[in-house]
Length: 404
Ligand SMILES: *Cc1c(COP(=O)(O)O)cnc(C)c1O
Image (cartoon, rainbow, N blue to C red; front, side, top):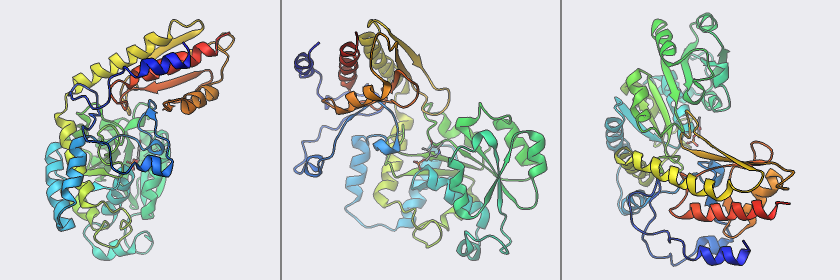
């Protein structure tokens, strides 16, 4: 198919803005075009996000309900602490936790939660962070080696050091009177020797608090309460991934005393968390995004994603030398994704060149083009309705034009 034909057929695609609730995670807004087009004014490239929730790609789009919460709450003053109190109560109820607070992302939840574990309600200790020695505060966090892949570094902002273990025996040996917390990364649960229940059982035995990072682990929606109910003392999640809340928001939830303690290091106070400010608009936007997500039709979402995958899959899989495979990550970014692989004696293009062609095309498209040679990977859960057809056509066009 020639470029002109592609462009011609694109004009008949459904326009984003058609109202329906069966459109996947994102529902487009019906607002008129803005008076001031900042993307144009600043020369910013916008693109179709067939890659997924990547911070570098600005992750997810906030739905109209969330934008409405942000816009409408910008018109009045309220006390910041009261916003946290009230939104926290609602969020805790939705997630079946004792208490909750909105943080500046999951990373921020890790830092503030850790601070709360160390300081308790002692304002003097809050002021001493991150210099722990001689303060009476504990200073070590135990993490399974397979769970230590970068995000655990958030905890060290409070001054703690990380102690790595692999087995139950090593864990029990590592526990001493400086041990502050047992930290668990849900995404790596399948890789670790010690699973959730055993982790909690060991924490209970040694009377230690636990924290779990579930940043990207909805869907399934049940994960919002599963780990609170399981008994983790603190649960940390991103707001701007699949929940489509503000990108700079997240949730720290769990035991009442620990959430109260975590708030001592957060704005409006000046502690190590002062830079983790979340404005009232985003606190309320986070609450609305969560509320919407809990009530959302997740079965319909899944069906929408499968249909989108099928559109792209069927467009490319007949091409000589091209193979496809649908992959569903078991934990974290749990949604159907498509691997498109080609035999490079038949389709003569490198993975990087393919990524670049899609990026430089019209419209620009981002896919995952950094994992394995002669293949790209894509997700459809961040697409706007109808974009799967554009993605299918563009990939097909590039595969055919690279075919011998
Ligand atoms: C994304 C992510 C984070 C960081 O979350 P932010 O909301 O971007 O601060 C932490 N841990 C894991 C496992 C993540 O995937």
